[in-house]
Length: 415
Picture (spheres, helix red, strand yellow):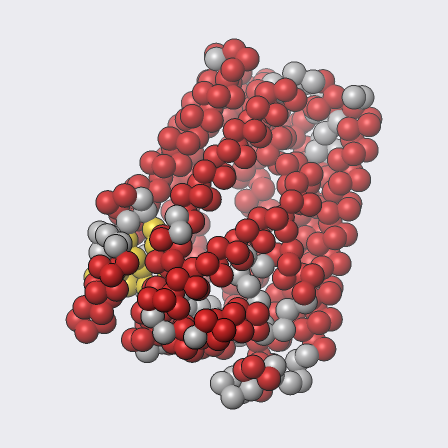
């Protein structure tokens, strides 16, 4: 393949993907706006029109903001590649460092910092304008800055050694380097899941043991009935940053723990909390986490193998605006442009995720009352301002959870 042909393929894929994302967002805007004036019949008794319209407005605002962000990211990618920024950063790092590993590390670090700096205004606007306007943001500018500092520090302490090791493996392990990098990445991912609950998450949030003894007893009975063992049930101070409510499992093996946002505990009654927990336990019972890990690891193995083939092709670099190839440049370019060529597979991942959510709901309906889960979901849809009327094509492409009307109908059929 020639460099000009690959460049044309890249530009075509980028344009097609950007237009598709913008079109889907436009469909979402039109659909939500069309049904803004009336609550769907399934929710007419539980969600007032005012809440439904607030959810619609929140969705419309986020969709318009996402359209701007999508365009900016596409233009930024063009500037980084065809505009020669990555090529200039690579040449500069080569001039500063004689070691290919040191120059490659400098290239990746500077690019990551530059990209984060350019995207920072979007995070600021989303937090302090969009989320604040609809009453969800509780984070102060001071806490926001502290979070950014912690994130950079954590990325430096963990990311730099990992990237250095990967670059060393790519340089020293011959043609089979991709297998060694994959094994390293798998080991690192598992290690991160083990230490995240106890070492990383507490850097950003406070986790306290659940104090409500009645709820704690009910939860322990549910866990015993489902055969789930964890290191504890914790409440996270999610309200410190946002009024959105959530619950999740984290960790692997003995480090598994159940985490409730304090906002969720305020939103739901005890039977509803148990129903939400039963849903999460459904993911555990159906081994969804293990399946997702296996799927992710398999895909990554194939991607690293593909990178191993592309990094020896001059057209791969030249087609993306880089004159001289190297392991670091190949690694950066590959994962930078991968979403451009893989966007057509996104609906498959979304469909698989929605399927698992249905399975978890069915399990919850057996371990708790389906009506309690329905009541919990309705409250969460209302309080989190989740739209009840998404565009079908948009939800098919993006939604990892079933749309509200479909999910509630499925649960009622199980009740």
